[in-house]
Image (cartoon, rainbow, N blue to C red):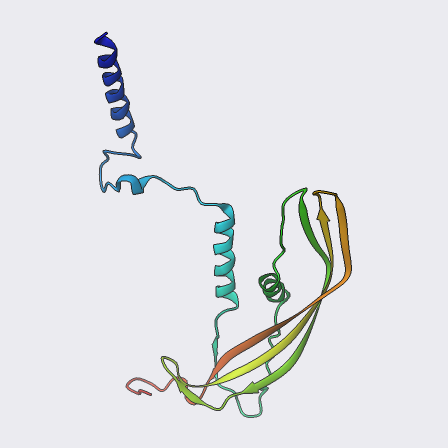
Length: 191
């Protein structure tokens, strides 16, 4: 009778020693993080969400600083929103609900985008912290998105809803700065 608890204790001790020497948990050379060293799986949804937010910030959320406006040169903004920017803003404004296969699926197809510039103006020069003297150039666009939307519902009664004339309006602002004055004032000159 005394052999069973002794055997169980020895087996448990050997299992703990084997687990501690696997390289991921327990005794290792270098820094030991303990329980923090165990990798935690991350959902692909969360990873994709972070990548899309980074893409949006990198491509569209910053206001670039351009060179000064030249006398007699063009002052109108020539960079209308790209189709990618319009569709990303559209997905942020009205995300596709559902997305459960065979239960609720939404498809948007036959997309046409109409872009109209509704305002284009330049603020008077002022001094911006960490930038210096600059002018803020505003360009506002009205983007109308025409598409057909098909919604397939599979529960409780399977049916399909089709909207051939769906439309959505998105307003996009493109703001950027133009430097004012001498861009390279030389060494020793401060604003």
